[in-house]
Length: 499
Image (cartoon, rainbow, N blue to C red):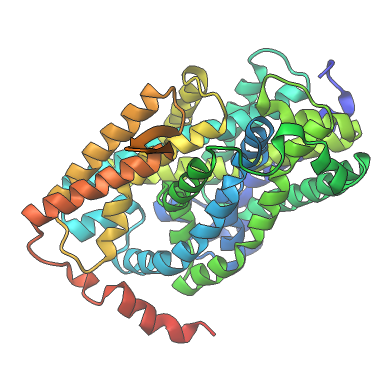
């Protein structure tokens, strides 16, 4: 990072700015080539859910884009660089989550489509007939997504810093570019530019995992030179590795942005098809995580682990290709961050505010406010690793798991039980995070057994225990008619469509 390299900066600006311009102009392009009606985003559903018309191809990139973000390209390699094999917990996490998508999300989509619901809070309100529970689920999603967007801002800022821009300029550029991209394009912007992001990421990663090891004498030399960061777990890391993977998997599709991608699909079968093929992304994730090991072998030395991947690319690649890789990382943060902001805005306009005369404008303003909240997370939350922002969001959003997922079962849970579980689980989770300095794991001692356990999983267990106890004391009066068929019957009825 010795000054600004004009080649790297020029290539970065070309690809990054082009993505923003294409995404921001997507409605105009749709009107030009597809007819005048499609050129507007006056409908809230059109702006926030793309009209619920995304097929398998667009949904593939949109849902994958929600998953593979600056978390993947910046935060995971940074954790591997600093902590070794422990950072690979992201691989089993993504493997666990795909069966969950296949089994649960088509059911949620059908209920949402039948009832015209656009958010998790809508579904919870329909299930429990509770305005109070609807509000807390909406607020939880709104708060949980802010540190996740903060992680994307850190990703964009990191690559701009690597280009040599000084001071707070990188963070300002990151915030302004994200705000413009989301304001103008709505959900169509990230949905229809996600394929650009994925192609750029694939090129950068495939070149990196091929060329960088060649510089080091092959993969055998890479592993031999990794010193203490060999891709194995050190003593005491097995339990946090497993529990972080499980809690992350359970949290992944509770976020408003991941649900937005699901609810924007045109059918339940579209979701199932994507669940079958999305594991391909896990292969790419594993290759990306190995960049942390490559940085050690390449001799990268830094106290800021977040800079590991940019420093590695600058050391190995010519300036112009480093600029392309930085643009890929920035776009990889921009696209999902836009979906996150839109998903959060849906919660405000649909569940927290009365009906609006101009819901699109309200959604845009809300999305901007959410990004401001994310900016404050960057400025004032002192997390040791960038990945801790995402894991903090997981602790928060996991408190909606009982209401959203257990609510699909044919058990008469009451809204009082869900509210009590949410409150106690949230207090425990956030309290432990605060005590541990935002670390996502907490020491648990049970007699002779002790170990570090995911804070999100601990808080969810507390939540579920409270839900169970309150339900025994005061069960719900009746089960909503929409759930009488039950998820098992729903899966049986739809099985003929999968062949």
